Length: 201
Image (cartoon, rainbow, N blue to C red; front, top):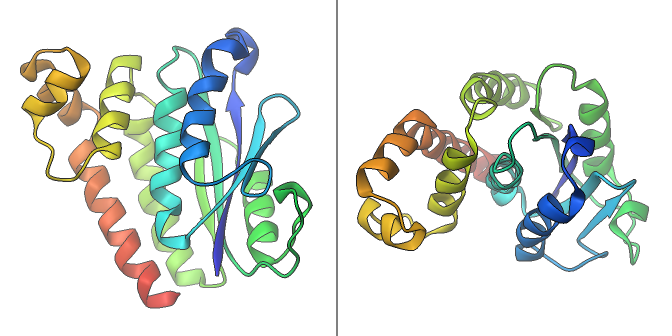
């Protein structure tokens, strides 16, 4: 079983790619090599393969990386399934994970995050939770996005003082941004997702 995330950048023409593209590539490079595991195409669209257990965190990391730029956002569709054909380029590989991700992405309208698997009950629950989480994530300020991205990338035991030192900000600002950005609720969502996907995969 693998996870495929298909995504694109909302309002990408409003800010030059030279600004947001390096941030996107930083996240993608953490999870594999181009073009076997990830690829950017048509300028602002991309696809990445991850482990099913990592998929939601990767999607939220991508979103936080892009939300550092005012007016930008990322639309992301996760598909979990099989890979029946392996190409040198991820965009030429195939299987149910790719189909689920592509179909889910095509259905994104006002939503910016969705998941599709072979398990309908799981999908229904997770998509409701993602819709609720997106009410907060879609409203992240650039500062909140940076702080939450950094917190997600750190060891779970990293405290606010350490984050403040890393980002050269006041601890009180870190605390406010984490609470306002729903970081602790996102952690609970990720924990729930990982627990459930472990049972299914």
